[in-house]
Image (tube, rainbow, N blue to C red; front, side, top):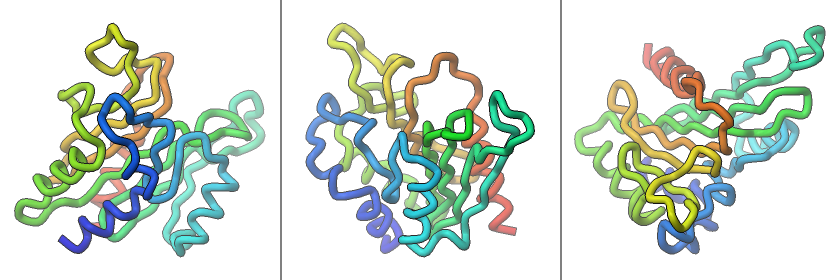
Length: 189
């Protein structure tokens, strides 16, 4: 229970003022102090300020349009409660476009407590399967793919996965969730 309380506090004090699900703007949400649109430099500074820099694993790939240069495409951090993955958009100036927090929740009843805490914090979701919060157009009944969104769903091995993401032009399978789950499973060995 102590871990759950710590996790909720880490979501940021700005969330307390979000009100109903209709008022929640996922673009303004932070997860452990990290927000969509942050630069790599800002993320590294945030990791250092929280004492997490030594636990961060940077994944790099050839930069879009400059194959001879390598760009950070994701950063994974093992936290006390799970694995946080920050995914960056393409290019040397890539900004955070997706944040995935895979929470352990393996203890008896922890997954249900986390789910309850998430709905208490964010209010009623706009969509239920998976639970999602966004700012949908007035005539929409769910979160359209062209809007920032916050989703929460059950993950593998008893994890609960909170995902904050920018709009996607096309929705390919999200490798961050698999990577976070792989890192989580590797850390349990």
